[in-house]
Length: 343
Image (spheres, rainbow, N blue to C red):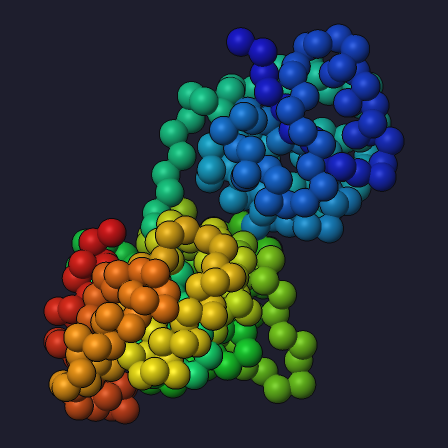
């Protein structure tokens, strides 16, 4: 079988030489020369080996580790004599690390000796992204409840992906550090995340958002690296904040949950949001349903959003009391979210 290879575009000469040799000899099949990081995973089923240079800014230790976890073989190329660059590639788990002064034909010979990706089983744990329109529809509380339910079947991390207004640490009553920024530093240094970077709360592991006045907000790419690292051995529920600020996280999710306040304003906001939806089919949770007018709220949601709610959450004092007290999610909330957690 001909090995299927992707290279990451580089301004250094080695990449053009390798591509030229691959095309002239047909020793391997060149699938893509990737310019963006998501191009590799988007075409992962067509690729056996990724060849990347240490000079590529977004080819971090964490990114290389994520490729490896997805079942791809990774070849790292570094400037000859640059030991730190060589060590970074090894730290990410590159299967083969070679200097860029190696002749292209020799590079191809080394690459062809690698085991194809198809014989390696990739394990992917779920990533549940919880979002919703602006206006505090109850995203954080629903994310917590879903994580709590899923943790009954294995380790689950509740991560705060709301980069503008993180609230998970306050809701759970955990210290603000270590936080998401600390996790980014750890993952980019080692390619993985340790238990020391997470807070243990009951049956959950919690990763608070980063709130550091005076420091620039995190970019979305490092956050994705952290979530990929966590998913190597556990499921993740991430509170993404309001749509569309963290739409990139939602697009990468295995399950996308949209929390909608059942008030007329909340339903109209949800309709506008879903008109621009991009991502997995949304599971709609209709929150804070009043005791009277429940059927009207459900019918209005169907009419304005075109979706049937997967879960109907009544407006009960117990849910609000649990949130104020920093307690585990209230039983009524857990009861009504079982159908969503089982997806």
